Image (cartoon, rainbow, N blue to C red; front, side):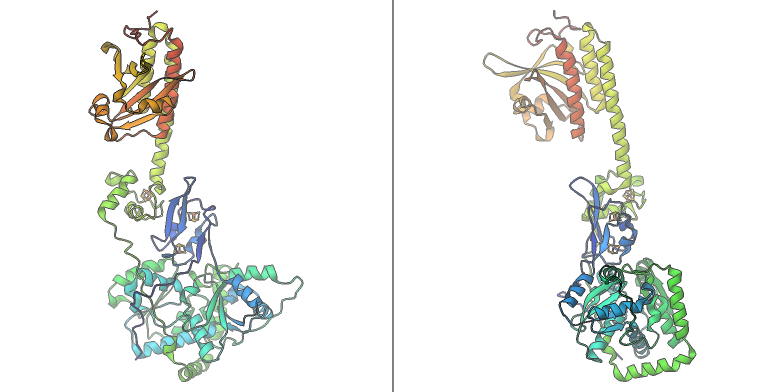
Length: 626
Ligand code: SF4
Ligand code: SF4
Ligand code: SF4
């Protein structure tokens, strides 16, 4: 029986997640496709850039480097980095390096043996086929099952699945097979059995193998992808050089190369174990949901082995692949290869190989440890913070909170609200909110055009005698367009002592019957300085002095703004707008008020024969002061 506690609990050990997935922020258009495919709800973070555009970047402390977002990004804003360039730089500098190549090289390079030759020409010491690591991996699992009889076990050579369990499902770690992945197994084999102490590079379609490197056991230092290697060779191969073939240092001798597709491991296993064990397998993005359901399923229903990889077609077409073959073509190549290998005639040869492994290898030297690094609970956000987030999205009713359209990358509005509360998404990323805003802004735009048309009509229709009506009607139209309650025109004058005084000339609702209303400027602290400098004044009752409140605030009206009016470059007076609570003035509304005030005042001032103040100019109906 082997030691089966293969997961660590030390808080000192943190999962070393590499910065593999990057985002070109400039290219991102904030379409949220990456969020929709990501298996980790908080691995993508939406934010506004300095031009107020929505962008989405990764949080690499949570990203599993599964590469799904690279596949779906329509702008190629997502990409991965690998070690191809540093590997070749170190090789050129004379470092002694060997290379381990994934069995899926057979479906990624049509002439893969010329790639082996290229690497040798570049100075690589040895080139090995990871198929041998797969053979040892299969052997180790068979022995582990025979001796430990685990009730149920998850097998995977996919670093994404391991990271998912370590970060998000640590309760599943005891269920993961303790056997390392085939690449790491081969690296250990090379070091322990063959005495190869070179620093090692792995070449495969997998972009995140380095998340599994364990420097205490293996010499793995570089992760190269087929895609980048392909680019490098195309760029650097000397022109006119005839491709020459060369074979691996330890050619495939058993069944390992069948692992180029996901079912390869299963086929291997079934070949040796028959139907003695039930093996379920799955690949692609569905595996994360499967793991969640595995954690909560009745153990009696679980298979003895659940074999998982996160890429759809197994590793062969992983995010770093360089194949232009269809999935069926890939499967066909592997099928034909394995048909030649999985023969009864070959069984005795393979069993002899396993017997040799029994004699030469210590299975526990291929065991690994897992590091549970559960993230701070992602899914718990206090209810009051979720409520607050709903309000920032303008969602007040149950119907608004259960639209659940998935456009923001969250399956439900509630999930979106908790992401906003956690700071990984922003209210403006709710598509429904954005649509409503757009339709509101279209409506407002129409209201403003309507306002200009109505004011123009009043001006054209009014003769000198009904000028006062025309201006009060324009103030009424302005109030209606910006949802305000009151609007008034104020004239500012200075007495002999140069002390200012403000007088209401006209207003909506009309104050004509009250006579000329004057205001001591003590009730308007600081207003005239700002207005005199051409700046608007915006006051809310919350911040008003008691005197301001007393003179300007009535129940239901507690926000006001004043825009200055200049006549021939001098401060003439101002237009004041008052409205109800929870309606602070937006910059857009301030612009409308300023423009409307300019029109109204140009109508008013141009028609005045002399300054009305002091002569009770508007006391009588009509402009009849002359
Ligand atoms: S998929 Fe993601 S990274 Fe790509 S453009 Fe859309 S939001 Fe940006
Ligand atoms: S690589 Fe995978 S886990 Fe990381 S952000 Fe993209 S989809 Fe999410
Ligand atoms: S309505 Fe908004 S918050 Fe709700 S799922 Fe759709 S986009 Fe996301």
